[in-house]
Length: 191
Image (cartoon, rainbow, N blue to C red; front, top):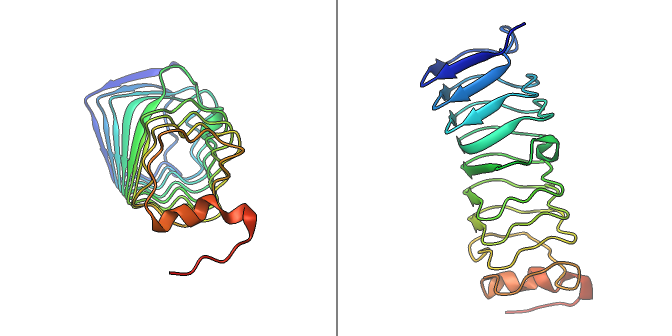
């Protein structure tokens, strides 16, 4: 099948579990209330696109390119972003559920995560320099050999980050969030 090229199109309330997702390039496209769960997005290029209130859970992302893509109100469980094309990857997340996803080894500095659930997300070996975690739940998320320099986690919570195993120079944390940097010591911190 020949790859498609879609420019400035809106896809509204399409269930791609019933309609096969066409491989190709999508530029300036909007996806609204679409079901892309378990869809094969492998090899697709999304440039300046937005996904709003979509379900992308367990979608296949082998070689998928996300360049300046925004996700808002999306359910994105179990996504393997580490399988994406790493060239110029740039995306943002607002009010999304990304639980059990992985960003393993991605260079995603200056990424914005807002009002999102990031439970059990793997950020191992990521470069998150200058990234913003605004009001995000990071319960059981993995930070191992992760670069968080100049990242802002002041309003996020439930994280456990070992300063000896991650680069956190000039990262911003709230006073109550500092406990998440001391977890490995098994100490009791009282107000």
